[in-house]
Image (tube, rainbow, N blue to C red; front, side, top):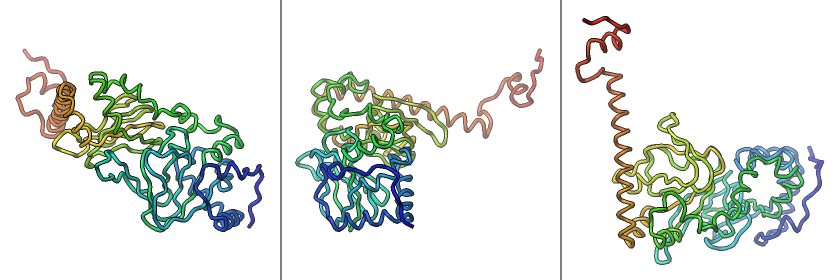
Length: 348
């Protein structure tokens, strides 16, 4: 069955603007395959699994196949950290690896892989960042789809505007936030630090964009990074119980980074689009060593937070044991009556 579009078509110059060179034969084959309803429906199903496109209007997803540009990579770099870039990648098959360079004299650090159904480069396409926050390379034969910022914006306009796209309305508030380093000096986590220390720390910040439902960290996993929530909202879970809801300016994950036990003590999930800055633990340690005064203040605050955490954990453990075994110290007669027999007794 052949699909017949009921909407306007994408202008070619909008589709290709800013993208790497494309294979014309590959593009013709892609466009031809999208004329088959079954193939197009498979593509729609893939888009529903990607959070960025799941909340988009149906006409947007229907037209997206006419806006993307297919690409085949057998290896090599897609883009490099620090380069300007305003297009994103959707992985159809194969694997990509994302990495960051924290210091010119240090090797690159892998920050994860992207497999089929995954995306990368979305911060540039969405206008959250003007430059790439990481490098991305192909580590096996991969089939990709490239989407430019101009094509994305044109699709939004052609399918009802931003009012039809709630997720995009949240993201609009984050435009070019990654270039706003001046505002870091006012964040609660940095207020007590020397200005030069904050400036030095900002050189190593890696921005990441998380969508609703995505986890920053999971309870019990090993952690070597700490997170600064810059914009958005997250929830903190202990097991399945929500213990906190936090907004911008909070630091997460520092207990694992600075403590001897590297296991995460809680799960943190995003409740809305959230812009997070990530700091590698080793980089934080090295930076603080250069600023003894700030290090002393930081260590004092960290110990205070750790003490509060350990006291809360001890109280929870005592409550659990007392609920299971009963209290380990003698109970008063009126407590026995009330808590054991469930009634008040007049004791004279």
